[in-house]
Length: 446
Image (cartoon, rainbow, N blue to C red; front, top):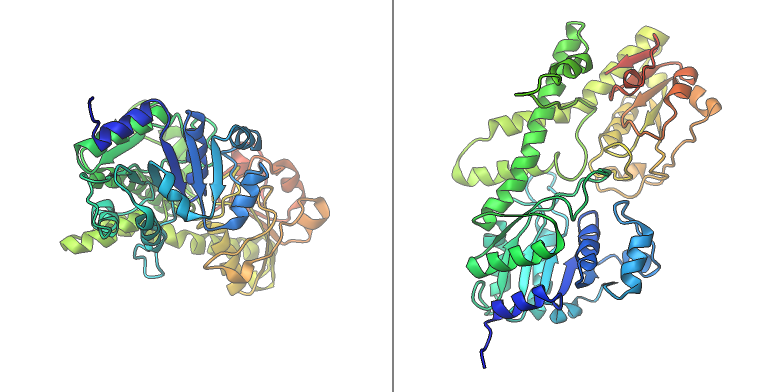
């Protein structure tokens, strides 16, 4: 009788879908991934420290737009997906995927406390033959330098007793053209057996797998993707300021430039960067580069430009109020349209709209917001004073009560034609009105 090695045994379980899968962290990355894996035939257990998420899942209520209630209910009803706060149940899992937050500290250093705490919990029940995968965005070397040592404190060794891998998440909230299963998945393992397991597992759940040579390379892939966007957005934000001084519309320039069929890719300016990835991820690399005494001037300059945009926008708002209404910002009421960081989603992580509200009120003005996707401002780490504020109804009487409307996020559900009729002054950071063919002397771009 042939005795299978632990990696061969797990490969067999992956092939016949009998491998038990755990996803730790049921947020914007973890819940869609868990459902995608469940729909591919595996039994998945989701783990989270927030009991309210577990209650919602048990009730068939999804709190993530990418996972409809009907899809969630189907997977739970068929016992392919369950959720719990009991981390002791990790002992019964063959594959454990870590999808926890990796924010920055106030000094812009990586905060890996969620990752290390999660690894400590995994280590409590770690057993031979398990595959542990990190998906949380981080700096190159984290899997090898942070995750592996914590797990190996158990006495078990990576690539010998258990298997370790990294696969960067590529979720894009609000994108209806791509889903977790259709987005190519970059994978890497610590050693040849782990790499084979990573390819087999993710290949069973998504359409395309892209293997790379090391976990550090896979970690660098994610950073490169987001640094690319951050730098190019910073470029057009800087061009916006320069061209505006010359009386040139940056939006018209970009629309014309993108007709070139080669050598150009359009990026668009805005009031600042939002979301978990683009405002944060580049700084993982700038932090890590200090270890090698290498500067990252390009990345840091892009960060400075993008971080300055909210203040630039508020300056333009104050100027517009003075010129068009003869009123100081300190005596004005401003309605910010869009609290989410991008259009058509309820995600407010790192949203520049929060900073815009703060800056308006720092200058003595009064700010409120309307967002069809965010009814109330939840608790945030940086803007605690804004917690509990509610979205203002978009009605003629309420809009006319404000001196200016500031378009921060261009949700499709907003009635821009009505806004143009009702608002005394509009400052548009997203070109939302011009794109819809709406013009007016009181509609200004910023």
